[in-house]
Image (tube, rainbow, N blue to C red; front, side, top):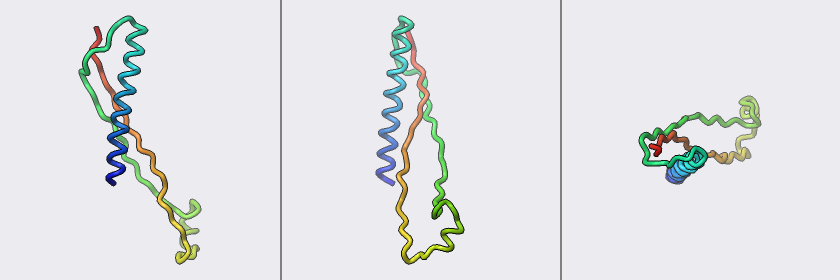
Length: 88
């Protein structure tokens, strides 16, 4: 859990950095300057993770559980932010 929290914090930082880079690109094309942040909203989407054997619950019932090798899946960590900037 601690590693996931750290990964999420890093993803948030990357999302804010990406928002700033996009804003600066748009501002440059419009001949204006990006100013301070006037609003920032973190957007999250909690999702459930379901694990099944061979994609089929019946396969799990039929499996020899003494030799069943279950490995934790790699779960991607994403963060999304909407940032509004002042322009001048």
